[in-house]
Image 1: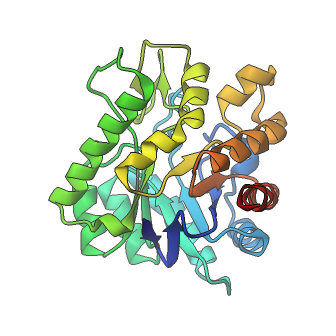
Image 2: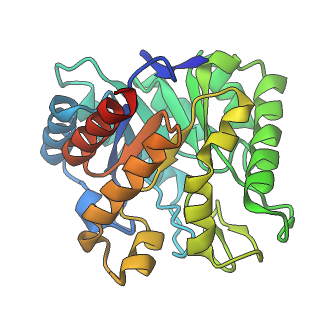
Length: 289
């Protein structure tokens, strides 16, 4: 079982891959990940590549499910264009992912050097984005997104159902399965929220939901695809540790990442590349022993 995310082979026979996050939106929940100037972006991208990231994920629209944000397509494209001009300059063999659910934004990003689309709505907001991915022969990360109101379904069942729906859309548009990874959507299934990728659930407190998903990550591998997970500095860590601001959640992020690796995660999306890279490689070494 493996997939190609850009130039990177991802799967159980390969090391866990690190996907570094560069946010281009001042609205993002963690201000330490936001970079708005060209020289900042190129410097951070280079540092991430040197620190162990094999994929860099750029996002210009904050989709945090507890924030009411909105960015026009024009502004999102403008931010993406700036970042890609800088990142494609660096002399590093790295794949670039664009975090967007908009077909027009994805089209522009892929035409400028991105190889991966990371869609937090699982192709469900704009199905046309699947056509864009196929036309560019790009790779795809689909996140579990379930706006259909199955609010009392148990976590793993609901995540699997949502992802299967996204995979059916991908198949309908001719996207090769070997170019897809799945993401269970840590932080996005809540009792209340906002944003384009928010999914309502009424089963348990949102932070319990997130921990339950991480603890049962192997069940998502039933789909036969690599699992990507984004844990970095998220709110469930703050809730458990009593740390309101994301700036204080690094240690909790690392601890949660190690558990996710033990439970079978194949891609870790993170703000903190070097620390995460060391933790992941150490966890893998212990697991192999």
